Length: 399
Image 1 (cartoon, rainbow, N blue to C red):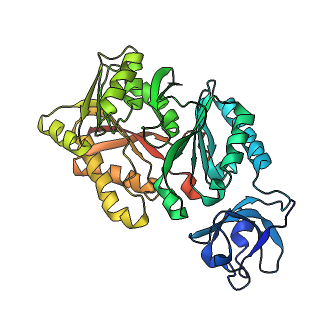
Image 2: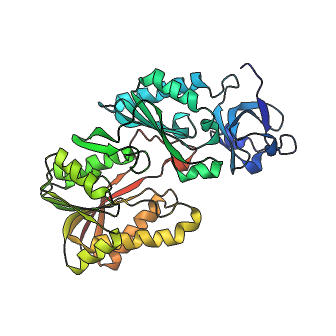
Image 3: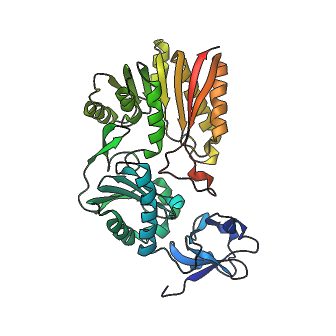
């Protein structure tokens, strides 16, 4: 390091979490008498020290947030620069290349890949990157240079429009970082083909985290009537049709979803099996229930109903209402795939919701499989927030 880093001193006995493997420093752990937080710039690199002044590692700081600092390296010789970003991208790439034959995956998953505040999704030779912290925002140029060195992409898009950026004092925007970014990009998953809207789609375009759950679902849908709720691009529904479903109804409230789903169904030669209803999911389920329609398989992949702890009560009721309504349109021997991406809804809580819903309807429930996020979304063992996705494959029978 050319210039010594400013120290960030922790209070006495507040170093135990970092020493135990965590990588976040909370504002109440900082000795603000020795190192006042208001003296730091958002994103400034720092040397994190214990109360005695012994180095714990390097990181970056944001004085205006609850998470005041994020550890980058436990070796004080290394700071987050282009060289370290390149090194960690190469390590992340080596895992994905072991896992997947085709270059379609989440390349970097923030803290779990040693790149706090950075997400990168790969679509062949086009990359979509998202920054969620001030420390990474200061390194935009270095991130692009590192990605060019590791993958030599033809285009990179910044999808820096996540609401979480506002917590870091960052503005929201979508813009090309390099090259000409196409509006639609082809993608392959589990043998199916899709086109993904990069600039106008949700988040970074495609939800790679559900890849393995979509693959498992294929074993349950042969000859089945399928209802795919919160369908977005038809990832679950179209793959179900490809796997031999008799018919698929996709439901989503997005204005563009019918166009996207129909396009993806056509790409796979299953357009005659797939229909789309653009409406509120709860309204569609009420209507189907009133019409006494029944499906062999129902897929629930809703957005996060519980984004913050304070939303827990209302969000839990929404999950319960949704799952109960889904069971009401299931055939006598039906399969329900129930998912939640809300970190604040714990796995046991979703299991309890499924049990309560089945008992309320006097149905017998058995869980055949549990699903998680795909391995290109690795979990950091000290950060439970990185293990957010829950999926239950449930057989719902008469009691």
